[in-house]
Length: 350
Ligand code: NAD
Ligand code: TYD
Image (cartoon, rainbow, N blue to C red):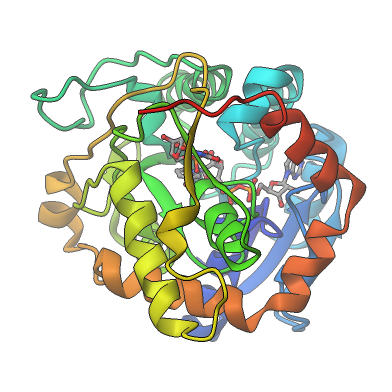
C-alpha cells in the first residue's frame, strides 16, 4: 500500500480515514476523489502535499482511469456513496447512480489498470433486520436489504464479488455497523440530536425509539479498514462492528446526560426533556447486530473505544467545531432537507 486512491474522502468516514493514514502511515501518498455532494466538504481534509484532492465523480470512468495511471495507484479504497436511508426513501435515484453505477465504473477502471487491491466499504444494512432473539449477522448471513439505500449497497457488494470471481480482481469487502464521531454530517441520528439539543430544539425519535443499532466510533472503523488492507485475504469479506447494541432511545438519553455534564450552564438542561416521539421511518429496520469474530480471529482487530468514550469525544468535537456546524446549517440544501424530512412527522404519544 503506497499510492492510495480514496473515493468519497471528503465525507464523514472517508475524511477520518484520510486523516488517520496521514498521521499513522507517514510514507503513503493519497489521492482523494470526491464529487463534493451535499455531504462532502473540502475542509474536512487537511491541506497536505501527501493528499491530492480531485473534484470529480466516480461515474466518470475516463477520469478514474487517468487518476489510476498518473498517480500509479496500487490500492483503491471505495467510500463514495449516497449514505442516508431517509434520503433514499424520499429520492432513491441518486443512490442507484452513485452506489451501483459508480461502483461498476470503478471496478472496470481497476480491472483495466490492474490495480493491486480494491477495497469496498459497505454496511451491515445489506443483511436486513433482526428479530429480538436472532443471532448477530455473520459474513455468511444471506442478503436481505429493505431500503433503497441498503438495496443499492447490496447490489454494489454483489458486483465486487462478481469481479473477484469472474475477472480475478484482487478485492476485499467490509460490512460495518453504524459509525459516529467527528465530521459526521448532521442529518444522521447522533450529530442531529446533539445539535438540536444544544439549540433547545425537539429531539425527533422515530416510532417508539426501541430500534437497535450496533454503534462503532469512527476511528475504530479506520483501524479495522487498515487491518483488512494490510492483513486481509483477497476475495474475503470482513464484518466490522462495535460489539455494543443499545436501543435508539438509550443512545439519545446517554448523550443528553453527557451534554448536561459538559454544558452545565445550558438553559435547555436536562436535555432529555427535549425528546419527542415522531412518525416512524417507512420500512424502519428494527435491529442490527454484528458478529465480529472473523476479523478478531484473523486480523487481531477489535474496537478500542467504548460507547461512553466515543460519545464523549463526539459531543466534545461538535462543541468545539461550531463554525463547521454553522457553515452546514446555513446552506439552503440543509434547511430544505430538515423541512422535507421533519415537517410532516407528527408527534406520537407513547
Ligand atoms: P457520507 O455521506 O458522509 O460521505 C459520502 C462522500 O461521498 C461525500 O464526500 C460525497 O461528496 C461523496 N460522493 C457521493 N457521491 C459521489 C460520486 N458520485 N462521486 C464521488 N464522490 C461522491 O458517507 P459516510 O457516512 O462517510 O459513508 C462512507 C461509506 O461508508 C459509504 O459507502 C457508506 O455506505 C459506508 N458506511 C457508512 C456507515 C455509517 O454509519 N456512516 C456505516 C457502514 C458503512
Ligand atoms: P441513522 O443515523 O439515519 O442511521 P441508519 O438508519 O443508517 O441506521 O439512524 C440511526 C437510527 O436512528 C435509526 O434507527 C433511525 C433513527 N433516527 C431517529 O430516530 N430520528 C432521526 O431523526 C434520525 C435521523 C434517525
